[in-house]
Image (cartoon, rainbow, N blue to C red):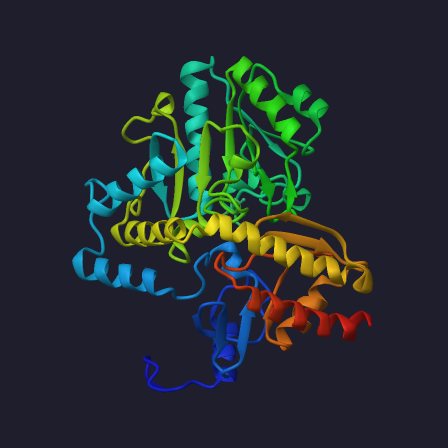
Length: 404
Ligand SMILES: Cc1ncc(COP(=O)(O)O)c(C=O)c1O
């Protein structure tokens, strides 16, 4: 056998090699994905899947959009990489674009959501150290998800993670979402920031209450505490506005973005205002911060989201998908249909999420079950009504078989 694959490899052979060589971290179905276009992906056996996971809320323009492909090709022939010690042109252009559309003043680029959140936590602790008497505690929500680095696992409010990889990074407190009493009790002189997802994604699509947020914003202003919004999942049009904070009539002090911002290319950003431009050389950085290919990808993707007005389109398509789900609600006993834009979820009458996901996949539909009773949908922002009808048709057929 040569080291380089010289022809079509049998799926079974690929799967055996995967089992033998890839460190086990997740149960994956026995297929190998090979290509994608628009709303569909194909496996190595030629099976086609309608993707309502959207690359985990990432492929906001669908799979392999020409605008992203062309931008990567152009940039790859110009400059793939240069030391982060230098500015590069797409880095400056993307930072300008993001500040313009968000109203923030400063951007730090990373590659993953966790990295953007780490930057936010470091900035909040720097602020606490120099402006708030050494305050370093950060309050986050129960059931939140902020990433998988050790610090972000400490920030995350998942009950199952609390004992994992002990000892955790100290200084994180978790309070139930939308419980003002719990939040006001947790806030103290040691608090430098509160970090929330405006709509919890991995936690099952639960939005923060607008009244609670207004109270929290006021309290943070009064006490000099920073409000951080983790918009890694909700940002760049996902909830029907460019940023989810726009739904709530308040602004955070720090905003983190990833997933949709690169349309599938690894890219993340932390945005903040001028008065928090506090890092000194050495505090934060990384080999790939402002990496030219990633910057070109971000410019192309965010530019296209703006050009096509996809946040507004996502709001309309989300309403259409919700009304389709509501029309099936009674028949299939769906509960708590919820969400904003194209970040939607509902609960099943029984904890059969994994079974439903597997059966839908057999019928050519990809959906996600973040917990046994919950199904989450997060298709590309440019999903058409025909695709939504196709999704509802497959879903209905599978439900008829499972619960009919
Ligand atoms: C709200 C939120 N924050 C952070 C992350 C972590 O992002 P990444 O996996 O790119 O590190 C995720 C990923 O799902 C997320 O949904």
